Length: 413
Image (cartoon, rainbow, N blue to C red; front, side):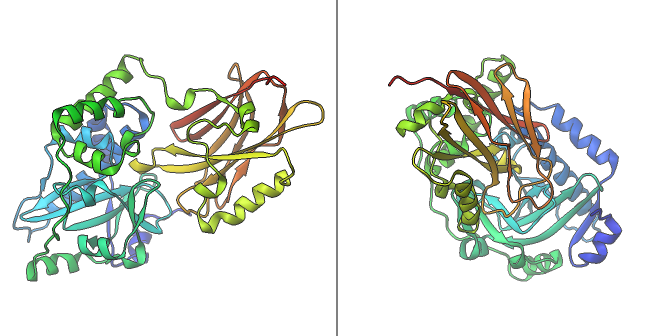
């Protein structure tokens, strides 16, 4: 369904709805392209943040009643080192700090705020604004706002991507309420538990661990107490950011997703890192989908099933999905395989135009299926392969793709 700005204003009369001109989109893209990022997901995240900041700041500055000039909380030169890892930005109006968290998802059922903007004391804000962008129709909508205290009391923490999630029904739609509230009773941020202070030796050791290349942000690779303490120090964050960019430029990286996973070892209950039981990654609401998956394999002896979270830039405003694979030994000696893709984070549907692809060892597309609106999951047709064969499964969303390489190795008796 196509919704223009005029219709949007009528439907959401209490929300702030702003036009995004072609010039504003072009300006934001030029700003993004002048910066360096290690992957397309981070670059797209930076673009959405540039665009939302520019449009919102222009609107603020046109307000004749504005008494203080809005300012960025971080220096402009520091923003790429933030957007490489985390979605969002903070600006100040006098003593008040506003966090803008943009998203270009068409479905906006919950407000997801990265943990960094809540639990790093120097990053936290008084108010958090949910920004929805529709680039095709050219509009921006502030779906509402919440404050720090409400997030602490009502938001649900999701450890899968380290976000605080708040249903949109709890957001206050009218920004005028926020302006009045801050004048009558200036907000305060409750005292936040301080993060550990890292020594230089600790920081260097953590840097080596974080610097192991992954396509997505390394923010989920270490406990948050260490990650938050590391990220909060400008020097440490900048150095990690520069190392990632240099690796990408020098083509010295090997994505962790490209390592062969020997599926034949699954029959011995030996699994590569990241492959888990189905119930571990599926939410309670998705257990019926797991049952559907099991029915495809009939749960007879010899069937093996595992699931893996595939990150398509979820911490940067993108999405995450769960890749399910099941295999069994057929009577003809071949290995039968079934591959499915499910939504993650409790989402009921996959996003449209998500591609699930089976590739041969030489990169030839053997099968491909594309998600539609309201698909609970998609799957490849069941296929068979002899031991000794390599193949790949690719998951692609827009200009972001992740490829998992697999080997079916003949095992000794």
